Image (cartoon, rainbow, N blue to C red; front, top):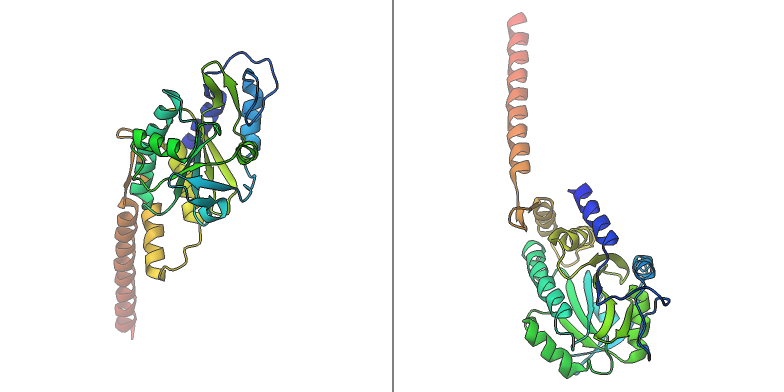
Amino acid sequence: MRHLHLLFILIGLLSLPVHGAGAATDPVASGPVATIQKFQHKSALQASQAAIDQTLSDFRFTNENGISVSMAELRGKPLIISMVYTSCYKICPMTIRHLAKVVNKARDVMGADSFSVAIIGFDTQYDNPQAMKHFAKQQGIENDNWQILSADPDTITQLSKELGFAFYTSPNGFDHVVQATVVDAQGKVYQQVYGEVFDTQLLVEPLLDLVLGRPKPDQTLLAGLLDKVRFFCTTYDPNTDSYHFDYSIFIGMFIGAVILLLTGSFIVRELRRHKRSSL
């Protein structure tokens, strides 16, 4: 499973998706730009990968209801960040709808409250709370317990650099890296997932890594143990593109333990009988 996961990551890096990318001529840039520029594939990939292990600053956003939300409030559990622009008519909607499907699969495995998801609008001229709310409704995620956020230009520029998210203005709107960023509970970038439509494992596996390694306060010892057993038994079925619980390993361990116990008891009884018969 781990080797297959690494292979998927390598394939994603070699085919880094770009929304509307053009020929590479200008240096890569993140943040709002005044003139049309062209996308530089190699530099965009380097910037995206260089962001891994970067701890995100305590940015402040506004959600779709006009309420202020800070990055600090999103810490404490793993976080998925996807940056979009609401006037995009194809790629961003496709990306979010696929992300929603994978997020639902991950929540089925790990629980609805095990991680958070934030969609952030980077077109600061138009991506205000109202536009973000309308976008979320169009994609069917307005009631899915996602953070739907917008921010001022300075925040978006700095956040883009820390996430390794490159975007440019273009005749069609924006050229940008199509990525979902997995952030750990402390706000550090853990992994990048690329593509409008990506393999389920690419997102679920790093989330499982983070959830399994996360301290679990407010849980009894038994509840924590049951969660670890549940996650340990989670396996991926490529035929259905879903995760399910496979307890066969523990059934096998139980049967093996019973056999060992019976064998040990038999040996002890035989030794005792032999000892009595020799007296």
